[in-house]
Amino acid sequence: MRSSERGLITRHPGNPILTPDDVPYPVETVHNAGAVRHGDEIVLLFRAHRRSGRSVLGLARSRDGISFTVDPAPLLEPARESPFREYEEFGVEDPRITALEGRYWITYSAYSRHGVRIALARTTDFRRVERVALISQADMRNVALFPERIGGRYARLDRPHSEIAPWSIWISFSPDLVHWGDARRIIAPAPYHWDEMKVGPGAPPVRTDQGWLVIYHGVFRTMDGAVYRLGAALLDLEDPTKVIGVADDWILAPEDPWELTGYVHNVVFTCGAVEEPGGILRLYWGGADQVICTGTARIDDLVGLCVARPRPALGGA
Ligand code: BMA
Image 1 (cartoon, protein in one colour):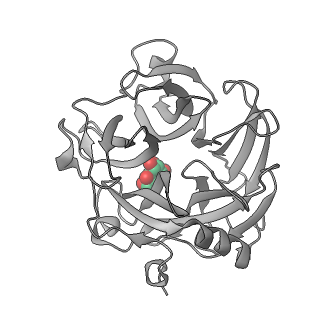
Image 2: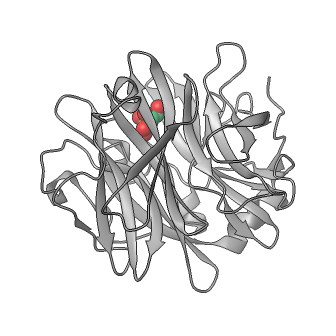
Image 3: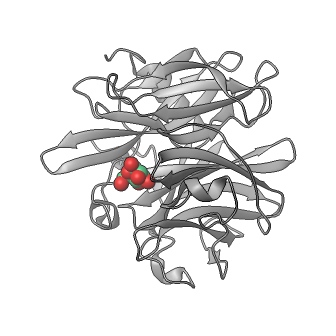
């Protein structure tokens, strides 16, 4: 039975809600968006490929979380100033937004001849953005900040590359959002499973009564290339190095035509979600790396899946 048939995530009937045609500057794609509630708006900070193949980050605003208007120019393009310039030469990708202590913090992938690393930027109004620091070495992707300090420290999930271990979700901590350490691997791909090739954090963790809800992406390698799906996991509120459960099943898989084919086929990939009244999570995901889709799920159902049907968090290699 497919996830949509079980009704865990209800796709919006108007999907895809954002396509390259909605962007008032030339782009090939509009996908993988960080999402946050800002006043009475929902903003999406999305990745868009230029014709060159390099990505910029554009902004879209909405009152209802469904109909978005895209700003006239990208919010973040590869930096011109040092030290970011050298590390953003090949583009900026896959932003996550976390509201934390009165500011919006943006973590994004900075690509260059040196590899991929993570940069941190901040804003209060989504009009002016200030780059803060490069907060990882290469090769690191998918950094999602927790929306509050835990035990006095900032916390993040990330996904380093590895030639030895399967690519896994790690957690680390910081006194200042810039210097990170005390890193631990917490969720690994499960062998011969839908996420066996790699797993990485998606939207920033969502606080629930039962724990931190993490929506992650898991990748399966087939003869026809990789399939990107989404899964859910639950971490302990006080000590998120402890995994309460990783749901055995995926929660979203490519099914709609614009998820099955596009810039990269067979991809659903998330960088952002927002909570709605009544215990609902509105998720945004990129379809086939070309368009943006949305859907909702009951937070209790997602949490329930992590607890009721878990698989070993580090059961893999
Ligand atoms: C990952 C990233 C994502 C992308 C996904 C599927 O490695 O590049 O931005 O959505 O691949 O192509």
